[in-house]
Every structure is written in C-alpha cells, then in structure tokens.
Image 1: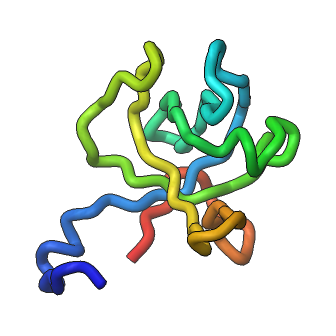
Image 2 (image 1 turned 90 degrees about the horizontal axis):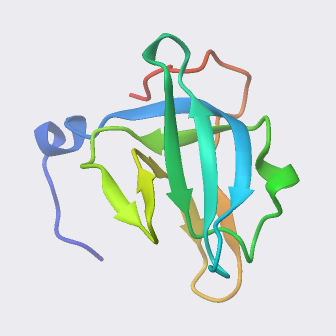
Image 3 (image 1 turned 30 degrees about the vertical axis):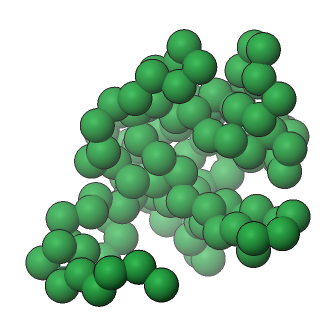
Length: 111
C-alpha cells in the first residue's frame, strides 16, 4: 500500500470524464494506443496509454472514461500525452479502464 495522503492532497488531482473520439495504434509499439479524447467545453486532448494488448481500438471508441487532467505533458514513444487514463490492473493478466456507470457530460469533474 502507498503512503497515506490527506484530503487536500487528493483534491488537487483533477479527474474528469472524457469521450474517446479516435483510437490509433502507436507505430513500432506493441503496447501503446494513441487516443483523441473530448472533454466538452474543455476541448480535446491526446492521450497515450499502454492498453494495446488488452483492448482493440474499436473497444474504446466512443466510450466515456476517467482521466487525470493536471499532470505534466509527457512524450511517450514520440507521442505527446496530455492526460492519463485511469485503469485497474489485477497484477496478472486483466486491465480494466475506469468509466462512469451512467451517461454523463464530457468534462464532468469527479469528486
């Protein structure tokens, strides 16, 4: 288990719902997908995620998922990643992306 953080520290993490608008396989990578994600009035962002072995592009296209918005932009395998997708990993062979149970507007803030 990780170090305990207080509520103020947790509240600094900006989690928002985004809709996956486009998914492409990253060239020369057997792990990475490149997603274009819409966040409503907040615009669109590109997100690079190591989900290729667990999801086909069509599995994610059109889905509303949860993203961390306020991390520094990173270059991953030559691609710009402007947010981070939330996913659960069972430590063996299953990875599950995280999304809202009910339909909710893109850009909605998680609290």
